[in-house]
Amino acid sequence: MIPGPRTRALLLSRSGRERYVSVQNLAEMYPNLTGPKMEHPDEPAIARAKIQFIASLPGLQELPLTGDVQSVALELCEKYGITRQRYCDAQIAATRVIHGMRALLTEYNGDFKGMTEIRAVNPFGA
Image (cartoon, rainbow, N blue to C red; front, side, top):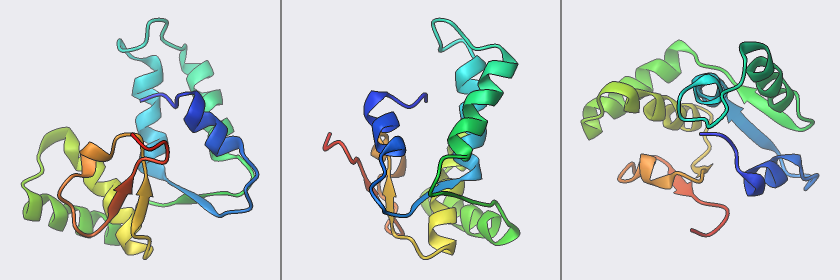
């Protein structure tokens, strides 16, 4: 989904804390920005500019998708019976696991319900 105002504020804040984003998160933005869920979908060039802007935010580090991430994601899929598009959520969780990061800030913590390897936290308290 598209970052809401609170998410944008969190991303743009200069808290001094390290912030990380999986390449999977950035990849999922494109179909959301250009797709039918948007009232006014972005043109490809606009979507690209938005994604590149977020990826270049100061202090934000991209975590790559690697063979190790894929292996852990597939293990999570098997363990939790994850199929279809939810594989993308498993890749996000696997990225955190591989990098030794247990907490995952997300407005959609239900996407990670039951996964004991990570702790999905909604930073806005909902």
